[in-house]
Image (cartoon, rainbow over all chains, first blue to last red; front, side, top):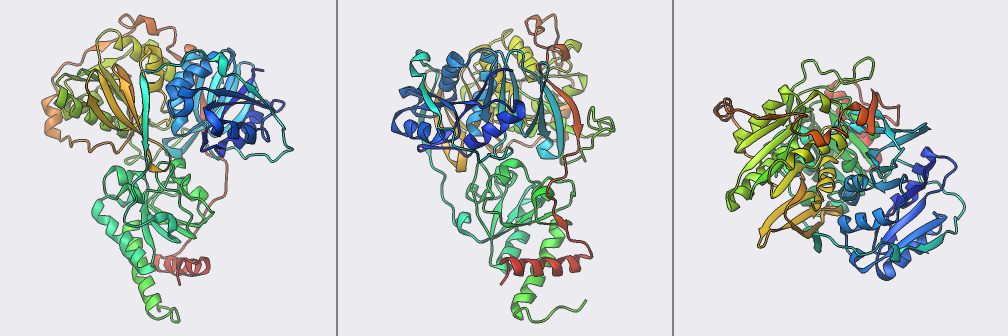
Length: 333
Length: 263
């Protein structure tokens, strides 16, 4: 069985949540193996990350080099290619950095690449069995991956449950000297923080959120009307921002805001994992969608199969009646 | 600046119900409506805008069969100067690495300053651009949300990262960028536009022209193979509210009151 490594992403001296999930993913490949963490960066923050990883990993390879102080997957790839033994399996979180790093890393390691792995089912001979999703989560697929020359596996954040075991009390191995000169024709310049919008959806207790199913920009008014009736705010998923129908500051998801409402009403949102990654704090999740097969219905508390353009106005009208009479009477139908 | 855009024809999920065949080997492809992968339209639009400033040609390429010509024409109707179809039985059932190898072989037959792909396609892999860059030893950046041409054969690009933040990088040409949706507003293509490019010949290249790719193409060389599609295991599923619309609304209002969504 090849050796398994886990590339740990970190921010401000703190490992990403996926650092604790990758050992669980590794056990789905080889129950007997505990992966070696690899962490790259520079300075005191990197040492903090290594220290906190000692609880979860038996061995941590630290690569501390000044060019690695800022995010640049091209340089990280060079470093990894020089220390990862041929034929290894490398786990990487499937997020913004992982999509930048892993396809090229697999080529340079002459390894197989499986992106966005949601489950694994062990190894048979040279074939690792993995589970992926296609068509935005509508369809699932079993894939097999030839690991005879190694593999890079991008692991979906949140798909593998972090195990709470005994503290590993791992040792930190400094591999900084083994990566040689790091040079890239791509240079990090700066990070620009997201602009804040007219309202801060991260502070709203109730969100009426619209997705691609809203169809046209002018239809957003029906969601705004319901939100107004409920005293809620309107948020959205990526396609609505891509179409320039709403401001980026209203986007919920891994590339937008992370929200923690009490109640989230997803209207015409299919429920891609990138969208759901922005929804934290276990809100009461209501999904309204025409397609019963939409992945959102797998995670919602309550589902309504209906046309949002008809349902939302009817709902807004009823909410207004309800609030106008203090909720004491019911409409007779 | 001469720009190559790699595009893919995919089932249009807005127009189809995607169903799995009984044996799980594939999805039901009869009567599927196909279109250009959405992100690839943004890549073509980005290429057209750059070429409009710098001069140079935009070429769109795809790996596939005869039926994939339609997306090349669609992108030519948007304004791309030409399309090329890379087609051969030897390329069939390639994995992402095999497709990247075919594209690499094609890139080496010409000269391109910049290569763009869409961020990802129907399979959600987001892999071919990064693989192609590594094979060519070109620099690569993914999830690109803006491109600015600066002096001396360089670009200044923004990458989308966590929380809606943007990472700014300088990147040397030639390079490969994967383009995120929303980077621009792809121009509309009407039937008239498609008709205007209908008779332009689309060159086809196959295994004899791209021989160096053959060690990585086809099912036999695929390191990653789909075994079967399946219906996901039952997870937590939503309680579906049944009844007339009015009844559903009454139920929902009661639930929202209980959960703090309505006061």
